[in-house]
Length: 527
Image 1: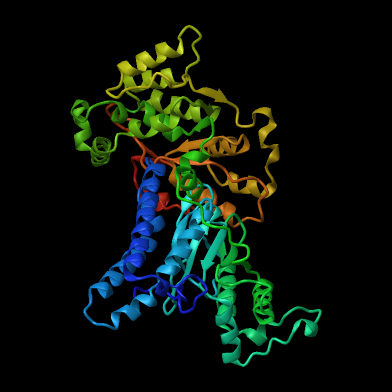
Image 2: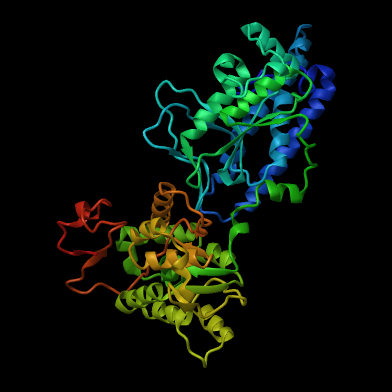
């Protein structure tokens, strides 16, 4: 049958075996399970619509879907085989294992991945676990030569919980104890120090628990290691002392053991269940949005607001401009951003507003200056409706009537909001250069979602925070747009100099590579 990477211990009756069903019933169960997984995939596509990582929905459940498909194909093959022994292969189907994993997923919240490979073994520093920090991430743990993957069946709670499923039964555990010659004693012989894991280290379930705990210790999510669970619907506590002893050993290792006594029935699949399984990134967006300079520039840009054929002919002599123009034809920026902005209140820091004003005043076209003015300028004589009408006259795209203009300009420490930051948080934020520092610190301090095209700054902040001491604050909320749009700008004059900025803290030594690329260029100013 199809491989399940060592997860499917379906050789006992702990979970209802496929042998209890005739072939037609088994195939009907396959179809039902596949239909629910298909509905899950449809929900993922909707939940992640417009997200800057378009492959995330597919990657979330691709391994599980493919393994299930292979299992169903194997079942069909054995059903159609004239070999009379094929019916015995059906009795050892791994379908009960897949059903148990899916049931665990339906009970979970905030799923990040199904059947995710992680890599055991010592690491020089903890790897980033898959999950949601500032943005959703697949993690950073890399396979090393000779390593075999350890499969986590469900990564949930935005990455903070690792769930591994086993179809072990009480009888199987007792058999394993006898096979390994392990004597569990009885309840009267317990010592006060708790069970000794070394005496039971050869029991397969204990091995799994130890490997799960050790692997999790090599990963971090939200400055902590993931919390680990073994889901054991076929094991029941209080029926056999040997079984209870082994469960205690696994708990002493650091694993939460969820046995059949405590496993609730899986809910029927519904829209509310799907939304609980994967709420989607849009569910985390705040009612007030904090706008980064990169978004303000893109909103004012000719690239975002004009047809390709109407752009100035001079852009066709600039490869970067050509790339932006072609990208805009393929993925219109306003179509992406306006869905997020909707009717939410919009704010930006003084530093972000000043950066936009400086850039458009320096190189912006008349239309780009006009758009920037409509976005930010506080003119009490101009109503929101008038701003939208004038902005519509400067764009080929529909500007929604609900757009909240002008964007309100705020101080990065209004209401002393940054007093809640600890010293480690301030150190991480200090690495960012302004205006990014003001933007991200204000959004975090006020619990507002920051909207940005600056994915580099987001990843840097995320990495630095993950390596910090335990953070008591909820992590910042950020919505990233995958691509930016620069200003088309006015034609260059003689003596024009390009400006390139350092990324990150390069005050002592340049680590971002800007100086290596541009230090020898006489037409470039490095900031």
